[in-house]
Image (cartoon, rainbow, N blue to C red; front, side):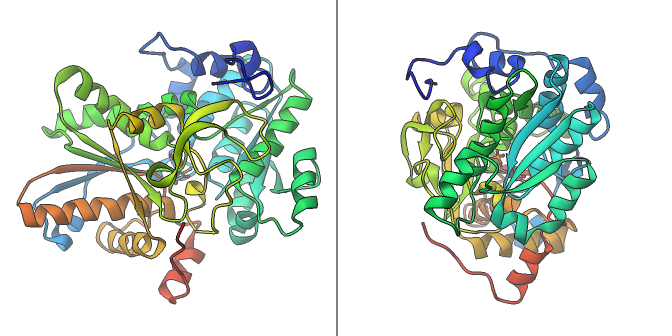
Length: 408
Ligand SMILES: *Cc1c(COP(=O)(O)O)cnc(C)c1O
């Protein structure tokens, strides 16, 4: 990772201008294989963890596949998604370091909701920049953040330099994660001793916090007497993919396992399948460090698909390197196909999945259908990152035939 101004490798001191010191250390820790979860964070995890590992018998039956389909149900967290796993850790570290205010960006509102809840638990104020199109399309996520006490601003806004510049160039800018990150980082930078920026995806420390998902699943598979041969996760910046995949990937490297790992991105924002591997900024304004990543370019403006958490131009450094080294695969899925899969999953398993999770389900169904032809009993694990109960307007549009596919 390179400093955006000097283009020298970033240091813990440099990173901790915007992130908490502990997260900055974790980000640049290239030596420790294990980093302990602090006891107070484990205590908070107990409210919803372990999350269930569920065998989707009804979905298997509907497909007529010999495959065994399992999902890890992260939608049972209080705020409805896996994002809380990292929000609790990040809020805890900020509090430990004497921080009073945290700031962040949010797309569909999942990360913002998780962070608002976590910040409030630790007695800190939170300011969330929400991508404008989501702020308007998904008002109830905004309400949730406000219930948890957050101050929510639609981005781009006139409250920051970055927002003003973007709005001056394009007054009708719909917002993107990259833009909202610029605004949140700017706010944290202006008061570094009191306010820290937090990020819900992409960074290595976020992926680290999410590995609780895969570590639990590993133990749960032991109890089930099975082992996954294919692991599938939707892909925004890569945190839930890393979280469910990395603990199993180590057995590929160390113990001769042959699990396949598939990242699933939207066809309208395909950084892993159609992007390039190069140094790029995590945000639109160029405030974040330069990260070696698969990217569509930090100026890329993703289409307004409903899977807001997948509307991000780049991928985390570690997943990008794994992709470059062919240690994982990636596929992209059209919006209509993702909802078709989500509806089948809802009808069979009774859970309405988040539009992001629908992408993982669609790829899971593709893999399970292949097994019908080959007769192979693959054990497929996918991550159900969240429920879609705050996304019913998207399902309405899908059911009334008003959703379209958007090509890159
Ligand atoms: C944020 C989000 C994602 C995508 O983010 P990753 O960092 O790629 O995991 C997926 N699903 C849900 C429900 C989300 O909120």
